[in-house]
Length: 315
Image (tube, rainbow, N blue to C red; front, side, top):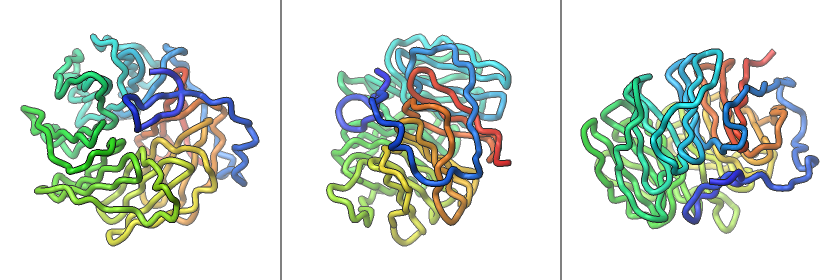
């Protein structure tokens, strides 16, 4: 996986830095002049696609060529993954129960001691783009060609989504209320028995690819994607929000409905305070793929060229 734009189409969600004029980042006033600080990364040339942790001193980041990094509260260090395929996503139920997925259907599991490839589904040109769950026996992974898999604590099994588009992001509000977004603006919702296809009310045509999703509950969900697209679901309908940018947004995460972060192309970071989205100073032009944290003053963002940023809160 190269440093560059995280694509949902094709066989990889690449991570490439484009030659973009810095002036394109002019999005208005920066939110509270809050600053993200760079962290020392042990892999300056790798592309990091996902980040998740169980605590501020137990954070995992995954990326190109089987890269897995771990943060112990003071230092990031490389872990042995046992594979060389690109990893795009990571999520866990606990510090000793972590999943990481990527290219060729690679799905690794960490038991607190070592990473093991559980090979949920393997095929040339196929990959997992996101993984998330509600518990150790209720994990969802999504990827190319509308593929969705579920782990029940013992086995991975494929779910029939009815979609043929690439699925880029998954977020479960509950085991019987799961949201999936992807290519062509597709939005799927699982009620525990079947997947329903819904469409955003975006006024843009064609519908933008959606790459990331997160929420606080089934009636408060955020999705982000192409051309600065941010959608919000209030339990009844999806509506488009004003992001203030045209940059591709790849990841979204928050602590509450009025404290949400979105990251993307050319170091773009936005923050939502419950009223509006405002740009933040990232200090980088690297493509940022994912964001996660433990609290509003302890947030991590990862991306191209081994970029790892940390946000310590608003002043």
